[in-house]
Image 1: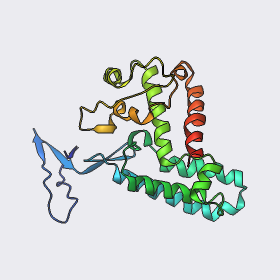
Image 2 (image 1 turned 30 degrees about the vertical axis):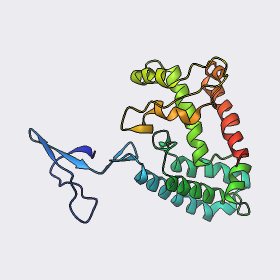
Image 3 (image 1 turned 180 degrees about the vertical axis):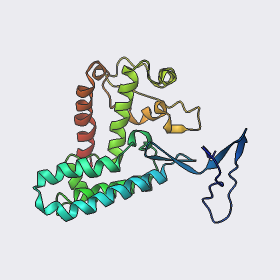
Image 4 (image 1 turned 60 degrees about the horizontal axis):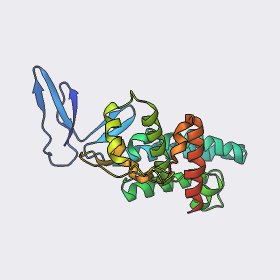
Amino acid sequence: MPLNLITLGQGTYDNNKQRNALTDYKIGEMWIESKNEMKVLGMVFDSRLDWHKQVDVSILKARRTSQALKVVGKYFTEKERANLVTSLVFSKLYYGSEVWLLPNLKERHFSRLYSQSGRALKIINKELTFKELHKVYSRATPKIFSIYQTCICYYNLFKNQDLLRYEHEMLKNVVLNDRRNVFFSFVRANHYKVGLNNISNRLRSVSNFIEKEWLKMSKESFKMKCKINVIQVQLNLL
């Protein structure tokens, strides 16, 4: 279903050489224009919500910053380069990724993000492979980072009763009540076309990652547990 964007005095958006099937609607004197994509808070939402355009934008911004850092990188120590790559490159590569870096993101998108992540880490050390760079500098791959962020999303929902009230009702349907398991187990209850864009539907990807006792911790302590037990463990398995 095409996204709708309120505009005035403009034609319909056409993503192909031939005119597509998008339709304009008029309410009173205002036209509602159908578009294949739209930008909201710096993120690009496409009509199919497969996030291909957002991945393109994230990689482009990260690549431009990486090219600039390559020029000046020789003036910094290895530790300083690592800090610069984290703060300047990965902040662009993963901007808004809580929304679009889904567990079921298409493999080609994960592959492109991984390659860009590896090229950015090459600024720190040119001798290591992409896999070695992610392990040595404890930098999560895109797939591992997706798991980590899903864990954080669950913590936020669990702790904020006023946040996404409807989502709390959905959580009751996806959490398995297994008292013998010290970890949370989840099932998927996908009743909506948005699929894994619905947070509760993503939780299956983090089954047996989150210990139940962790939810009693502060957010910072919970994040540290996830960094150690999710990111580090998964990196060691590469």
